[in-house]
Length: 299
Image (cartoon, rainbow, N blue to C red):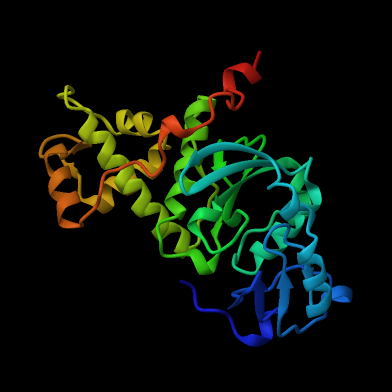
């Protein structure tokens, strides 16, 4: 977890999300005329992310929040107890996604899509009420994705809210982003550059993904980096980075190039206690949901 910057650089020092109080990490773009310049505590609706620096208006809103009384915006595309993923169009739910982006910026240093939510889709990680003390579903994280990315980015920014971090939930969001790549028929990866925290998280995810892919290629006697990248729907550079970190790339004794040390995969996983189980279950995606494929867009 990143260390929060000095107090003078943050315009909001603490947030109350529902009934949970926690510190912010970075400044956000909340309007100064509404929030102020140096706010000790900002109240955030846990369902629609509307904000208030005053307690009473926040409590009044929470009792009658439209999202709480109806449903989480968007449509369910994935569901496996106790978590679901909702796809939200930034153009259709502009106020909701703007408020979500303002809240997220408090914990993201170099990412912000607040000014142009219309060109993004948002994928919400929602915890079902049966897994929490709440009577309603709780949004606990999300990632955003450009509707049209010339670099084939499958993710723009990603955040698991601080109270729910360190439980491996980021892997679910990453897994969904790569399932999007697979269903769209395009090799993809997260928008670069990654923060130090993001790089560490992605390396762990990529390593497990690459290891799983290698062990599934039992009948192949010759495997290239490109083969692994294609199997994982990962860009080649990300695949090479993971393989290097895993120590699975060996320099050939004669000639240029490298070879994969496939026989070391199980030893690598065992030594690091890595469970090679996909973070998302392909069978738990909604049958009626299918993103538009790349070849369909080009027709």
